Length: 413
Image (cartoon, rainbow, N blue to C red; front, side, top):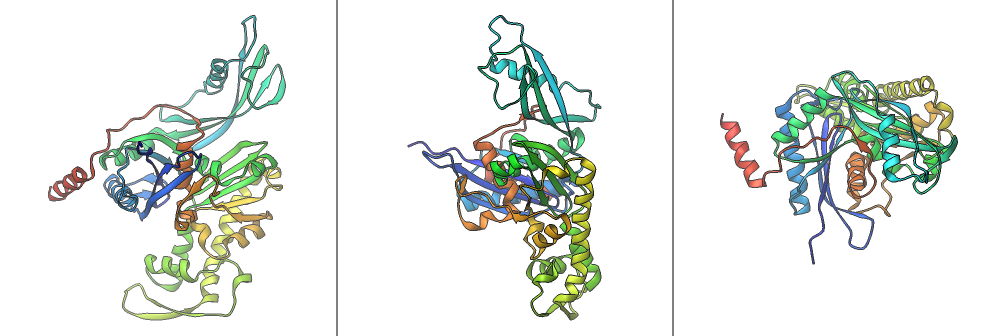
């Protein structure tokens, strides 16, 4: 029996690099997660590479740890990107059917989408995705798939995601220097939403919020498709910094306290635990009450979701999201009370998004929101596609032993 194809999803997050490796289950549309890893990366700030060497090292560590856990070697990566350099908007395209039979073909659909993406862009930007929202045939809207139908005028509404060419080039350089091939660049929000937002939520209208460390990704769905997306330069690392400053401790200690004992909503404050921690010098010990920690955490959490609410209102899509509510994901959604705070500020029924077992199988730990985008990249690779802009290729992946030897010689230089 032939070995199943192995797929790797690499999420270049706000301040972390996360990798999951999976394979399609025989006789099923599901993906099986074989292994994964998530490592912090100081070379990435808000999804943008600020230090190629540190990013390269983090990519190597994350993928090689995932390979070791999965007991396989990957042949390439589906690379998820995010950050405020990504910008999106909606556009329309039209294509006249001049043939006598007037039957719509796949080539006609390709042509109308190509017309929709024929827009002027500055030299430092490129199209990353063109997502068809809906088609119209002879002015009749709401046609999901026009292939095989007859008409004279084919129109399409699309959602276009553009990116900074320089930032994409830096990400690609870091991955290439780590010795990996990139199969495709993917906007992480699209992959995450394709997996976490149900068809019913997409149809009724819903809001997806990916709360990363240094950025927040927003997606508004309605009538079955993505209508609005936005990257906002604030995230859960801001909460950690507030806690570090308030307690006069290190960022690492503040992050540990936030994850283990942090509460983002007063309804979950059951008692007032006294927690021991070390000051910024690493030697002096101190104690803090849970309520005091919450006094540092809650204002920043409320600020983040107020920024989300303001952006949603200014987007003109706020009225679309109430029926389906809010789907929350990302590492920042793990802290207790974040969902309750989001529901209170935004006035939307809120749930934390988890991958559906019909799509993905594997150990429970891989279903954490930390792995949400990487998990989405696996199902993206196994299923649906969005039209991409410029094709990008990197050198084929070096074997693990070659990468290790190369790394030793680089350290000696």
